[in-house]
Each structure stands twice: as C-alpha cells, then as structure tokens.
Figure 1 (cartoon, rainbow, N blue to C red):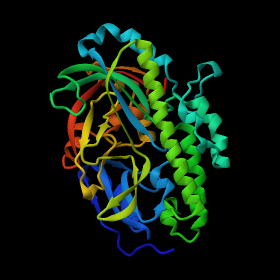
Figure 2 (figure 1 turned 90 degrees about the horizontal axis):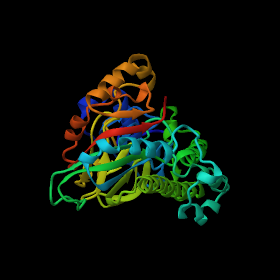
Figure 3 (figure 1 turned 60 degrees about the vertical axis):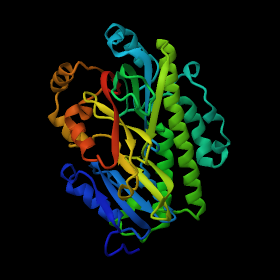
Figure 4 (figure 1 turned 120 degrees about the horizontal axis):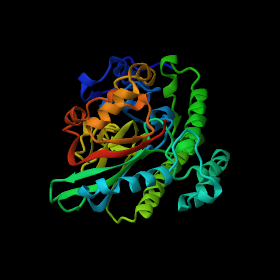
Length: 392
C-alpha cells in the first residue's frame, strides 16, 4: 500500500527541543492514506510508530500503536486541605502511606486480602470478547497498582497564586498528591493483540510504517479495539481513584480539589468541520478551559494547566517534559550520586527510582511549558517533595 507523496499538514511546537528522528516519525505518520492532520509537542522523543508527544488525526481509522501500549496512562492530582508548612512534620507518615497503599514493579499484583473493589470490575464490557474475558482477573489483581518505568506517586506542595483559579481553592500553599500510571497489563495486552491484527490486515503497507497499521472503524476489529480501549481508559481512571482514596484514608486528610487528564488514547473529535479520530501518544487534550497536569521529573516542578483550544495542535499539549536520552544511555551516564546531589539540593526524598528516570534525562520543564504558551496557560505549580517509584 502506497503512502502519500506529501504529508498532510502538521505543526511542531518547540522544534529546538526535538530530535530529527521524532520529526521524521511524525512526517511518516502524516503520509498514511488515512491521515488528516498532525502535531508534535515540545516534549517529543522517538517512540514505536508515532513519536511520544505525537498527535495524529485520521479519517475513520484507529491506529493501536498511535495510541500506545500503556493505554490511557494518566495523571491525577489531589489537593489536600492542609497547609504546605505542615509537610515537614508529617514526612514519616506520608512515606509510609506511599509504601503501603500502592505497589510498584512490572507485573506486581495484590494478594487476595489486599485487593480493592470498584464498579469498573463489574462492567459487562469485560464479557464482550474472549480477550477481555481473559483480562478481568488480571484487572482485579492489579487495580490500585502503579507499575514501573516513569510511573510515580508523590507528595508535594502546590502553590495557588490566583484567587480566581479554576480549582476554586483559596490562595496559599497546600500539600498535594500526584500520581502517574496507566492501565497496567490490561492495556498492554489489548495493544499487543490489536496492533498485530492491524498489521496482519494490511500486509502490503510500506514496511517503514508497519507499526502504524490501522483498523477501519467500520470493521469488527476496529469496533472491538475501540470498545477495549475505552474500557482500559475507565480501568486506568479507577486505578488512580483507588490509589488516591487509599492514601487519603491512610493519612486522614480531606481533599479540596482533584484534577486528572490522560494521554495514550484516541478520541472522536471534530477538526475543521470534519469528524476524525485524534490519537494522542504522550500528548494530552487541551481543549479550551480543560484542566490538565504536565509533570517535570522526580526532582523538578510540574504544572496544573488549562487548555486554550488551539486548532493547529489538534487541541493538544505535551504530557510532560520529555526525554533527552534513552534509558540505556542514562544507565551508562547517570550515577546514583548524581541523582542524590540533585534531589538533596531541591529537598526531595526519593524511594525507588533508577538512573533511567533521573532528572538529568528530561528536558527543562519551564522551557517546555514556555514553548507551548499558545496551547495552555498555567494555573498552579506543583513541587515534588516525597517521591515513590519502582526501583532500588
């Protein structure tokens, strides 16, 4: 199957922060016969098929690899009714809550007595296909776990400087909890199954874009994937809800406000009057007025933001700061002492976390936020203080 001679229209934010390989990946995606428009966020780096930070609109087609393997990976922030100055005296209690109320590590699961209950596990959708039926038990065992890689749960300080803020939180500094994780093994197996089906259904697709094989929304497989993706999204949301509920119960604090948003997903939207499927892989929705969270790193601030609704970005923004080096490069170049020194200077306590997730491997978050000032506006700043990740 031939690609377009020329890519469809696409726009790039923060080009100076993006490597050429990521741009080449987006351009290849923009030459797909089903492509309508594209965008690249300033946190972009190379991924499978579509780059991380890539946005692709298609006509009547969904690309499993343009969604990604961790379907509906998301952020959730809880702002507690507790002033920031009280954090120092609570550190031991907060550390214990992070260590006890979620699990980190690839494949980690709760024992029977520790498992959470949630209405998402009772949905009939789990019985709609053999694949989903086989995943319900895994979902039950993994609900409320955090996984590995760049996933985290952390306490920090949020600064509210505008009395008319959309969080409706009074001015001041508060303790907050921020989490980042996705649909765990459920999303991975859905992505793996349907990406293989997509590639098998398009054997003549140019080999350079085989990972961007798509499923027609008119096909049974396309509808099955869409349904499974939506379920994985609800499961990922439930995952965060359980984590935040467990931690709030453990520490006994009331929540003033909650913000959440997700990436690695596909949405049916309208672009320039046309119905399209918008894939955001490591990019997050930024419709006008929509709240979201863009984190920095284990040692750097993140931001609560509000979307502006820029059409050229397909109403999208970055999902983080973005990597400047691969995991293998980081393991060779970053030492544990480098991480300790960086975090000590910023008064951050870390549990877990390996060199491949060191602050040094990420782009400067303030510059990445500035590079998309026509996509989002800043609502509040979140500074990490006690961070829990997978690792030693």
